[in-house]
Image 1 (spheres, rainbow, N blue to C red):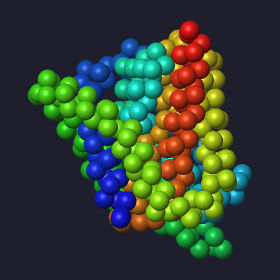
Image 2: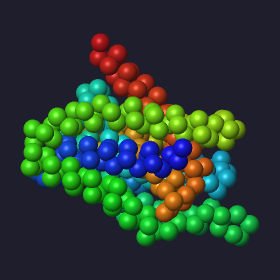
Image 3: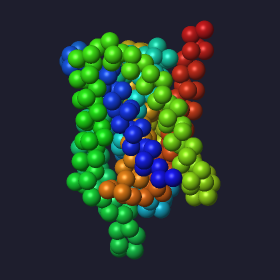
Image 4: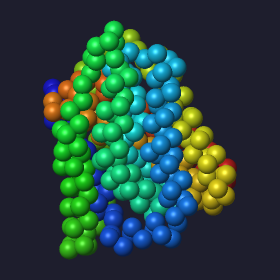
Length: 285
């Protein structure tokens, strides 16, 4: 089974679901909470890719894993972050807005970062991984930006129907991601089992540093506790489906091995952030 025929519909559905939660007026939140939005985006778009790159360099990952680690680091926030923010009593409106903004901004930052990263993945003077930047930009526009716009339009024109559809899709997001991860694990169990110790350590370290850095930035700029919780979750929760789509796409990398760090990240981010949310819930009791 070719995972690309699974991941592309899942990514499109997730982005459409995100669009259903948005209204054009929601983008005014940027003006109402500019400090929180800027800090979160710095953590998401600047800090996380830098940390991913640093981890990949320190652990001297092979080229394919190197590219895959940076790829998951520079992808936008995952839609599940909105649910996690709600469970953590965070700012859900801010979470939705940050997911939308990061999804739009990374349409352009991911190609730039990955083009630079592939140059670092050179082995014996020969680049073993090439990136068709134009194809990546087109795929991102078709699979991410367009579904978001369609979702916004559907909510604007048919708000009642949009709410019903969104309720269904929001419940499917996590199971679909787990299904994708399971299929991927089965297909590549040998490669994953051979590298799970190294990649698991790298991914966990990246998650801890990213969420810790987000918490530190939020405290330094004296944000409220609801905003702090949301930013920690938003920075840690990545759109693994997009990373897998980019890695597996026959139009871009066409290399499932590059997607392995994203698969491991998808599992670990839920473990780490569920622990974070659980700690908050227990602490309130």
